[in-house]
Image (cartoon, rainbow, N blue to C red):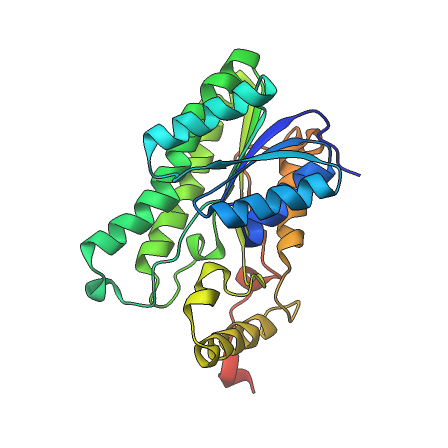
Length: 267
């Protein structure tokens, strides 16, 4: 089994979905986990799942787009556990289903602020601790939408594409200091539509789920992934098992971006 015993890890957006799965994977592998989210109830629930299972975790509420909140989050982690070893930049939001000319500037800015600025800020305040010990691991959650164009997702695609190249750039700058930086690109993952689920009517939720399941069914593996399947890959990248990996962009997508999908035309 992959182990990160006695390491301290921050996981942002850890209240639900992929972030929750990353936090559980880290805790199961022996890490002290700092669970961060803007949703306190969800974050505390993740902490309870970890501690009920015998792991070590605590919750810090933080909006990753806010520099002071991020700095305080990192300080809380170091204050609680005496150091910091791993950062999983997972917090992110979607951008709605609009073409670019239909997006309000403030909505575009919000997606960039959370997804890209959040990755920048968390890395900015974690890296000095990594430099001091000449060791650190950052794993960024990008997306297959950062690798390819996707319909009606201009802000989201832009933010995730930027995270991918920021990952590579950080790997270049900080590799000589013993800091590894990698990214995962999840495809269709069954997160019950993440935080959109509670905002939708049952009819809207069922329709959106059907669309995702149909799209996932056209991938080589013919299904959606489970959050834990992404969490295990993030755990691997954060562990010594991936000691010669940095700047890597790892698709966890059931083969989605490996093939041109003819969709209805192939039937």
